[in-house]
Length: 280
Length: 280
Image (cartoon, rainbow over all chains, first blue to last red; front, side, top):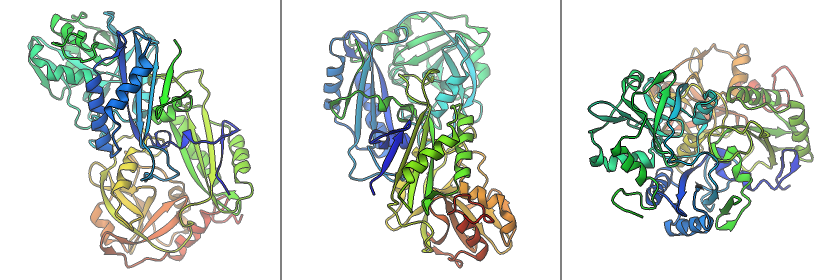
């Protein structure tokens, strides 16, 4: 007898829900800012996607095909958001992949619903009780297993746009949808992502271009109290660029504007090439 | 401009892929054996599903509606597998749920592809290098974030049906799609699920009915070497019942048949009520 399915009570082919993205979160995604009709930091996003495919053992999509499809969806838009999802494809029940399944490639472009990234209005953030699990096998990659971020976002109080997530040892790792950068009087600091966290494209841009910073950059573990001692706290993401935080809980930061060095890197986040020296 | 999407290169509405099961694994599932035309251990599966909804903050489906829909799909089949997926519904980008979204309820029934559970052929298992992450917030529930199990299943050598997964401390927790039960000369043991693992319905049946066991049951941490010292190793799942393991790697177990006490509990796994005293 053939399989039968009901989706919200209606008979359903159920093919889409057989995709392993739905069944197991077996895939990866990228969220990309579109400015001046072009996807920003494009090669960094593609590099991360391909690296994630390699780590999860998913056949990598053709980067040229991705760029062509992105171009088709972006056409006619100036400012938008492009999302790419790659999954290991459909399968029946069971954690083992179907070796004959075709990888699923899904791209979607829509107008940016939130305020456009690049504004200078500082964020309001809070500490989250939700802690990130410890899993070195998945740390760094932007996979589709995101229940921790979903639970953390449920904690956000009205008016707070971001939250600080700690690891199982109580050390801050990142924001809910951002990496974090702390500015102290003599250095910058961003936490390592050994056991948890997403290796954000903007974070990686800052690391690669750290010679443009006014202060040395340290990639090292820190504690929550250091977040309250910092001169400034910045959230880094594809859609936000490098955005200052005005308040963490009731604590107000002395520095709530982007210093010039971060401004250069922030602007670079919104170009196709994404390199500070490379005017689009 | 309206959103546009491409699914494997074809223009796509993309509604199914906007479901948060696909985007973030934001949901839960159950896999249920159907015998004699009825879903086995039904109330235990529904209880776990509702408990998972509560922990993830997803509105719980109506159990009577689930049973009616299960009955509709099962009709005309004797031996089959029923899968239920509940997700937080569709949303646009962003980890925050849409408070107006309707929870997605998906049920699918198909004939059992693998050999039917309940056979006495012992399993061949192996140790997995993939370790389970440590995340108390998600431990126990059968959520859709299953990349660890996908990666572990990729390790299985030809002819091996199951693998032993350890936690970050190297202590065995469960199988890839089963819980584990060890028999020693003076006790049974199953590991706790504080930081990782799924609280299987069969495992819970064994715990609840432990007075039917010939030996006391301990729920306690153990080490890999204890798995090699045990008289017998058993895998517990809805589809397998309580199934003996013949070999773990090259190690052959002295006991490769189900003792009488486990036989009673195994048989109970394949009834609608799922209680040993309750003949269907």
